[in-house]
Image (cartoon, rainbow, N blue to C red):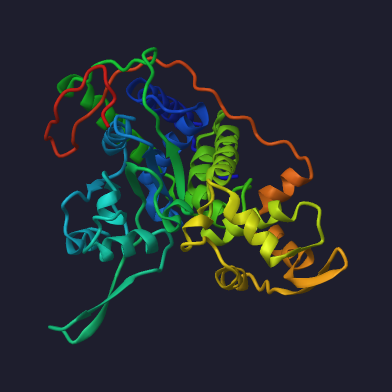
Length: 398
């Protein structure tokens, strides 16, 4: 665990203050998500210390779920925000240095959605910039040389619906939802409220920048593994550095939000196919190709009906399963022989790519969802560069 600062209460008090501000200004889905957003914002103030730059995906199913309002609060409290709306790719790349800004993208469908033509460079930056030493390579014709351009920077992206797997797999996921009539936000007043958030942001910078060597050297005990651990490590280092109840809260948030993301993720086409094949097998040791296809194409909520006029066929099924080194064979079923698949050939892939399904099969309990807690609220908008935005009162901005 990282040594705490000389004032052992300073960090925890600052995170508590940021938590109070956030819950006054935005309605978040549950306490664990709130803690994660607080720690993500704080982590932006010490980016040079981190080996990975976690993304934060702020997503909702529809408009008016509070995505832009949350992004506005993040903009006011993070370290050196860089809002990339209408920014050229060259401007974004040239803005990233060894001490990078915090990239903020609203309406992220302009980067990843169907209207994303011409944004290949920005997509590449957001994909590559999660890890250090992943520079973009560009040829400078005037200087006749290849140039390395840094991409490492934390980024928050807001939009409707899910982001690409390459982003969400490296992100803290914030699932916003539309407020009920019982959930209120108070009006934001630019002149009155903004200075307080800017002051809090400066305090976070002063606190964390005073202990950068300790942050960089920290090797916290992680409740996660692999890429999820890479993504959450900066947040947990900040929590350990703050002390108080934050180390436990950070690990609880990490564990539950990652589990929630896995439970809610439909997965890639391949992993979805593996899960559906498991259901089709039931307790059988083998299944014919014809029976497996009938089962897959019979599910009206599965994607397999869209694989052609007759749905998924034997050739397409074989091609998809070949990626997992699963091949059809002659199998014996009820005294007859037919082309099909053996359960034993799926076992390794199920363990590797569908671990949640393995747990469910073994009867392990799942994590209960966390109910929202009532919050008081006052709104907060505005820009660090001094420009104002329209005051918003009782509605969370979309």
